[in-house]
Image 1 (cartoon, one colour):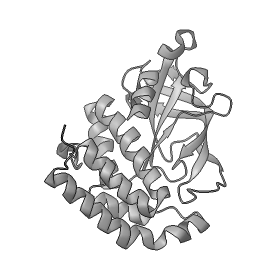
Image 2 (image 1 turned 30 degrees about the horizontal axis):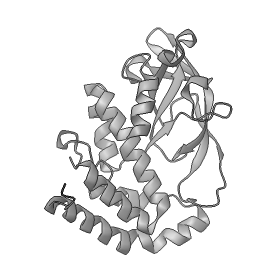
Image 3 (image 1 turned 90 degrees about the vertical axis):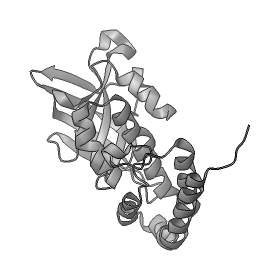
Image 4 (image 1 turned 60 degrees about the horizontal axis):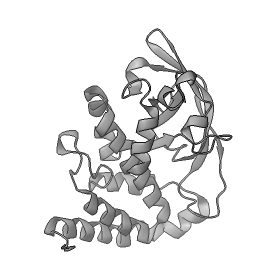
Length: 241
């Protein structure tokens, strides 16, 4: 079996390495001290195609393969682990989940700005008393007409304060256990959604890790990701990615 990189993979690796060394590394130490989110660098990474690496061209992504993505991620991590964590959640969980399970309208509406780095994506599943076990979570989403009302608290959400779009898991039918969990696309600024405590970490400090609070947070039915009950499947696919 050959493990030689293709010309395209080498080109992407070289581009990411040059950007990482010349741009990301310059402010990495200072950001770790001050907890300053690397929004300016992430925007530049979007312009280079690093924020929608496996998103197809039709949604303004790079259309790269997994090896190219990992090579680029490793180069960014060499200079700033915080930036790499944001890039990883954004690409592997948020973009990948919407591309694989989102409706065509959701792909058009969200994948394009995500791939451009115009907005950052986050994934909210972990809870204070459930950890990362989706079956034990207590956040609920109750359908009322053409809306879902979300109530609950999420913890340890990467990019929670700076994300423009969050995939949120919630129970829609407790009796069905893991088949009764759904996932929702919640935009920053949605009424009833607020950012809570931000962790004061020992490392990765430029990547914010926060609580997210949902108090009668209302989202339209069309913001459900996949079908009702697909939340556990989405969580497993996202974490596997």
